[in-house]
Image (cartoon, rainbow, N blue to C red):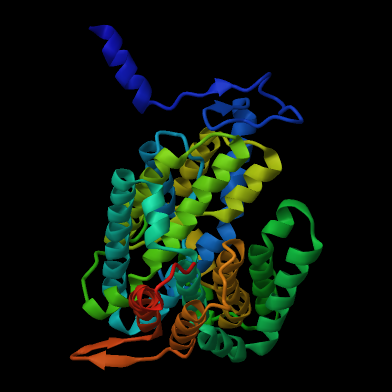
Length: 430
């Protein structure tokens, strides 16, 4: 009777075998998800994952106005849940998703509660997609969301707020320019981990320049001085407003693409098939995002930055991600840290988002390139063209009392128009 209980307990408690001597990785080897190095090295690598995700995860609440410490709390909690739901097979950190920036900015007038309600609904929808993938298999997802659709929706989400980035840039052009130049130089010219943290380094450089030139908001500086070093994150409940939900729902497409891409990347780098946990990864991120929306945090996603750290170190141990999750949770209980992030001036945000929004847009183009989408075919060309202009131009129309912007119309247009036009064309189109 005791053996079954021990077996059940082993599935709940993470266990890792020591890789080699625990101090090094063979030139042709990797530390697998169920392995680890010595604990001091594992802790160091876990801390490195936190540093890698900082630039993006903290930038999202800085731009959207969400509490930084609350976002960190749900980021750490979400990572722990992800590791549990995927049964320790997929090493990943769940940080703030850039895809939420555009819909959250577009719905700022609806208030924080309505924005959180939209995040929660996106999380539930993503978890539902995960359940469907578990039932139908990952190939069904590929058939329902071909690269043409995925790339177009990702691109229009990224480029929808191009005007907002320019407005922020123009508010403090000198600070914004210093930030932008720093991001570009560090990303392009500095090798190794620092180069991967180009956005974070650029924001820090912009902040220092802003502090030296008097560009920081005096009220926020005073709030920083008065903030306590230790405190409980601020939790806020959601409300549900149809217009805000509809603007945010297309983000599900981005989160699906990011999660599935992450699972495939880890599988390729570790040489282990992970197709059977793709659905679990989607469910896990959906649950984490829904929890964030329920309590006041930003929606989460898997991080390419952490893929870079794993590729550089060849350490894919989930033990390191438990360390990263714990570190984020500890930082979440420092109001002083959150107040520091909110002193970042508007010009710095403008310089950073000028790059970030463009990167999201080009990610959609990259999806097209990697899938060899053929734009000589009229169906592909016409549908993508109309969707992109609707998104970038922020086509805004009102149906009844609900006002819908370009992200919604562009996404709906391509999701509805593509299968109809493809059927009319009478042939298979990628």
